[in-house]
Image (tube, rainbow, N blue to C red):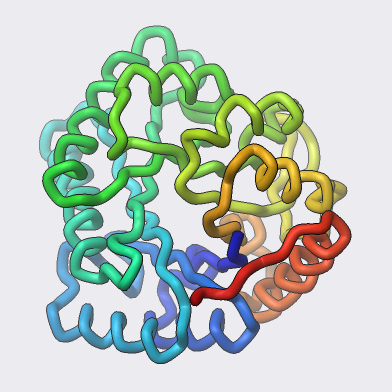
Length: 283
């Protein structure tokens, strides 16, 4: 496994600065973020900018395992839904344009909806992801579902239902376990259940159970990374372990992405040592 950091923590910062910060702290990979208000907008980024980003990645030696590019395909307004779909597709095309030696990064996106809508919306969500998976198959890109507390896909069984319903090698899982943790789930149960679908992961810390929960910087809570990391490795995962800093943390007064990135690096590398896990650098 490799230790990465997500540009979600600093998505409006120039992309070269994002890469420089992550590389300078010792991480092995970076997740880029593509949205309408981010420094990297997949719908407007130019070929020159793409070449510059690829060059910066190559110079740093950082791997690019994922691009987060969310779009709500449950929007009822046809124009808004079309824009959301176009943004995710543009993110998939950007993944091809930024592909490195190991191929295009996966594109991470959410299912949206509300928990109480799972029964009525699950087929539509599956149809939406099947649509994206077909586009992914054409482009050679994997779409990775991110579960999310407060959305329709908030529990492991719901996530597995959608993954199995779509049943495509181009539709897999971004294993962000923090959302299951704040739903009161036990990783000893959901890790064996879902790891086989995972192509990428997010890691953060958390406190409390939904709706009274808080996402934290790794190490601020009590989550046992030294037990979790070997569990997911034993279950067969060998990709990026990517630290994601939530908007809850970003909204704190005096928030500094470099400081939380450095602190997260220390927390995860220490936990890996205690758990007997080695984070392998990119070859």
